[in-house]
Image: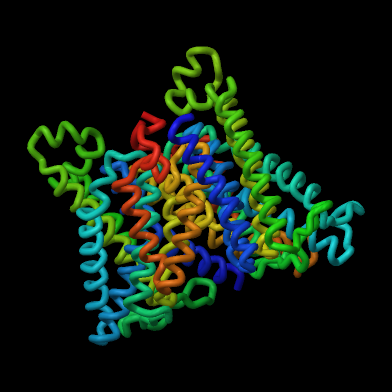
Length: 323
Length: 306
């Protein structure tokens, strides 16, 4: 077992143990905080697939995060008001159906965005993904049917068969299971033939093309898969807060997802988990000490970018993964 | 009446375009010469506006405020270049995005700390108050016309600076081969600081000019920053000409879209619906234009570098 695997196991156990202890002590707030960590980690794991493995710096993943959230919000609202969506299809409060829809919609939207964006590289790719996210952001703000600027409330958290999701702990466990399953999927993808091709595309697309694999197709699949995971996280986030708003689409959200990955360690399996743990803790601890917590968050981030390359996991487990 | 309205909106589009050019010129210079993505450029815009509003309130003179905005933005720009940005030149884009994102957090929260959360107000200088009659029977704010004129003058000045002066020659040389000009004995790190401060001063100047039209508040730079990025990406990063053309496209398309789309849609659907859908589409329009341009010309209209 390598040092990084040990650290990963410890992180997973810590993430599981904290809310269990908090629930035992009757502190549901900390369970919700841990759920926030899990959901953000899931969203960033999606981005990590494109950014960490494939080297695609998407500055627009908030689009997929928000789409997942709005799928949950819109389906739940229609079910609540007993209005059919379109063509007589009813809304739903069933989480499995919402999750599936969120993943499919995020993937369907990511496909054309990916096809157009992947024609560009470097800073142009960063900016065109940002442009697509901004398009959806402004659409969500000015489209009045689903709350516009005010967003949508989900009055009762959606239901999962056999689980009482209105309680913080069962909902945390559901999200935690999803995160662990996704991390397993990430590991499988990373080790697969596709994963090798994706990492080769990051290191040198021309060389990959020379051995007969078109990097475009590899990147496109990775981009769509990555959007689907982030969309899933969006649906969970909506149910966590029982609210969706256009801020889920904002470029700050996209920036935050990148921050999570860098904080934890880019391209590492548990990088987003470590990143989300640090980020939420910083937010909570600094937010408790001073109103100006963003100032200090900025200083800490700056310090990490300038002096701790490789993030927390890079610091703890030594040798860089990406030489 | 419609022609007057049309001319007014066209001028508004030009005015927005000119402001965006002031922002985008700095961004594109910094990217062209140093290869740096500077997300904190919007914060320099905000600093310019705050400096102008504070000095104008203290001295009663808008013009002193304008000078203060140039000095403050250039000063803060030079400071962060020396303290932070300098370490990022040989990093990848991801590190640059992240570090300058952190700078936004620091500068925004810092500004809120110093100036408070309430917006400041800046009056249009008395010499430029009033309106000018338009052909077709409308009136147009003199101040906005002055902004357009100033923007055109700055564009011309930049052109002369880049193409005719020694500094401009060094900037162009830095864009094409930085090792070579360093080898020829040009102090490259001073050049970088100067270019960064110049870009910052342009952003601060833009902020001060706009500050008299809107309220001066924390976060005012961010929408402009994103638009300025759209501009330089459309124009081709590193190209001042591209920034000018891109800024005009974005300014006019955005303004005219908001003005025309609702009325165009009203021809095919009920008025209330047309207003909502038109507004929604108009706010997305420039991003659609950008995606279209990049889909067909993946490195912008006037790509300066390979």
